[in-house]
Structure formats: C-alpha cells, structure tokens
Length: 424
Ligand code: NAD
Image (cartoon, rainbow, N blue to C red):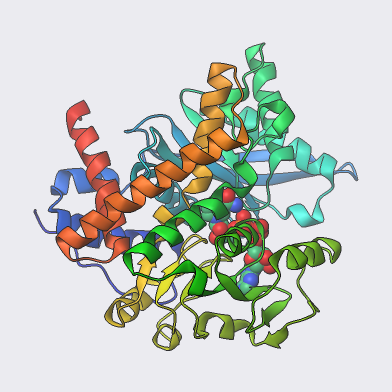
C-alpha cells in the first residue's frame, strides 16, 4: 500500500479523530490501496442548511442543520438525527463514518449517514421542536428517501420526532412513506424489539466473548456505566442470563452491591425518580469514576464517549469490556488495555443491534408486514453472533484486537464492493 500517515494515539479526542485513528490502523494492516483509502476517508456528501423557525413568542430563530452522507457504496445511507447544542459538522462527519463501518460489520445493506441540528430541545416546547423537525425534513427532501437516505433517532430525538419527519415527508410525496425513517412509534410502523435491541446486542456479544474467554456467565460479575436505554437493557438482559450485576451508574451517581443489584427494582426506581438513579437504596454509593475500575469480570460502558482514557485504563480490572456506548475508549487507552490482555468488544460491533433492528423495521415497512418480537429477536441475535464470530476470526488470524479486526472486516467489505462497482 502507498503511504498512509501513521495513526496518532490520542486521549481526549473529538469523535472524528477517534474514528480516523482506528480507520488508518486497520487500513494499513489490510494493505488498502491509497486510492480506495482516499475515497473512504471523506464523506460522499455534506449538506448544511439554515432553518428559520417561529418560536412560541412569535420571534423567528434560525437554526443550523446538517446531514452528512459518508457512503452509499453498500446501499442507501442510514443514520440518526441528533438535536443537541454541541452538534457541529466535524462530529456529524465522524458519526456518519461510524455508521458506514457499523452497518458493514454486521453485514446489513446500508451505507452510513448522520444528521443533526444545533439546538437545545430541553429548552424548547413540543410545538417548537415539531416546527424545527418539519423544517429540517423539508430542507432535506431531496436527500431523504426510502431507497436513498433513511434517518433514525439519536441524542435529543425519539419516536415522536420520527413520526413528524415521516408525516412531513409523506405530505410532499402525496402518499404514506413509512420506510423513509426508522425508530417510529409502533402504530406508525415501528418494529417490536427496537427499544431493547441495542442492549440485547450488547448482551449477545458479551456472551459470545465470554464463551471464547471461558467465563461462566453464572459465576461472572459485571458493572454497567449508564442506565439509559442501552445500559439498563444490557444490565437487565445480562442479569437474566445469570450474571451478577454488582454496579450500575448514571448522572445521578454510581451504586454498588457485592451481592448483585436487583435490575428490575433499579429500573422502577429510575422511572419513578425522573429518570435518575440518584438515592437508589440497597446499594452503596461509590465515586462515579470508580465504576470503571471495579474487580468485575465484565465492564459495559453504556453512557457516553471518552470515559476510558490513558489515565484510568491502567486501573481497569475487568477481563472483558463490551462497548454499549459509541466511542467510550480513547485510542491511547486502546493500547494500554490491549497490553494488559483485556478483551474489548468494540462499539461498532457491540452496539450494532440497534441499527440491525432498524433495518428490520425498514424491511417490514417495505413488505407491508409486521414481525413478532420473537422473530425480530431471533434474527437480530443471529446477525450479532455471526458478526462477532467473523470479527473474532479476523482478530485471531491477523493477531490484532477485536476493535482493529472489526474495522478491518468493515473496511474490507466496503472496499471490495467499491471495487466491484467501480469508480470514475
Ligand atoms: P440515554 O440518554 O438513554 O442514556 C444515557 C445514560 O448515560 C443515562 O443514564 C445518563 O444519566 C448516563 N450518563 C451520561 N453521562 C454519564 C457519565 N459521565 N457517567 C455515568 N453515566 C452517564 O442514551 P442511550 O440511548 O442509552 O445511549 C447511550 C450510548 O449508547 C451513547 O453513546 C449512544 O450513542 C450509544 N448508542 C445508543 C444506541 C441506541 O439504540 N439507543 C445505539 C447505538 C449506540
């Protein structure tokens, strides 16, 4: 392969640097041609729009919105829409590329995209958010499409916003097009099993890794950081499979019980306590960072990015880390963890259960049919297990970490498809 600059090891990274660092390393090991590397390292399309929205007080505010399509080589692009004050083009570009690798690693026929609007939905009324979502949809009318680019929820958006998007898009087409977006409410064509899909995929990949490491789930202990959608479902499903979940945490604090935490009780407590674990009883409150360095078999970071860094990676005692969150480990921490012999099931594999069931939602919409929860779960479990086995095989063959192996599997698939399709 021609020269590709070496990957720098960074500790506090923006997501684009984190993605590029692993992408470069995996490309080098694969011996990817420089021409193909140059195609894959940049997004195919970047759209920036200004969205004037009438606020409740009659004033007009202009929001900046983005949609980045990283790749459509494998199929229509897929990726969520983030409503957050920190949204910026660099972040959206990285998240779009991550979607390309995630879809490729689980072998679903999608490219990668991401969208976002710099806004603070917590300070906006439902009406203001609806007008913003409809304005964003209209400005992306030539981008979105069931066969072109299929959005989904991300931070700050959920089924309600996807319903508005689907409705606005459908109005412009003169017919209902529910396959244009996933993560919809069930009555609008959302899929059963989508809510728990990401946590379920975390559970499936954790059990697959534990089998390889010869860790008996019935004797294993676990700590889960983050108790939102991904963390609470992962904790619940892992405890159902026999693991003792000794610690859980969220922004309201970290809680430890040597004998295991009753996850059902924790979910009930959180739901009755404005979504927070603060004051959770029957467990000892520990420092929020301490959850990452407990003497457990399995650690599941399922909160946010950059929590495992060069400064705490050396103190991690778990044998296995399964990344529920996107980008929880800095690339500098990667090497510390690898040298300590800790296995890491990386984000682009471990949390791909969500996009897998989004794909099933799109398939069901296009079929005009509905699958049972059981069918959704069985099929997504199989996809996650096959993807894990494929990545594991690559890691063993090339003697690399599961993270680099996952990137290699993904990049190889996209690069091969690109070569078959041919460039200009
Ligand atoms: P969420 O908003 O439902 O939950 C986030 C949880 O993390 C909350 O409990 C919050 O209190 C906690 N948290 C945030 N910062 C924390 C910190 N510093 N320390 C401890 N806890 C903290 O979000 P989610 O949907 O569960 O997403 C979590 C992560 O998983 C994100 O990185 C997201 O990008 C990723 N992810 C989510 C999905 C999905 O389907 N929801 C799919 C793929 C990846």
